[in-house]
Length: 73
Image (cartoon, rainbow, N blue to C red; front, side, top):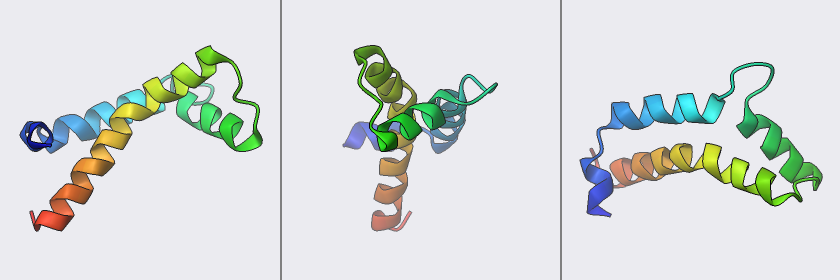
């Protein structure tokens, strides 16, 4: 995953916050869809796509942070 090492951390942090928390009001989609997943009501394909869309950048950020911690950077 050398491509991940080339992405600046600040870009990932800002992108993960913006995408993960959008829309900001009344409730972020990531929070709403995660709650639906936990409750077992995440059944529509559009809702599943929405969860993945809002979660992919925060997931990439977590992977990068783990890689940085393991490599000692």
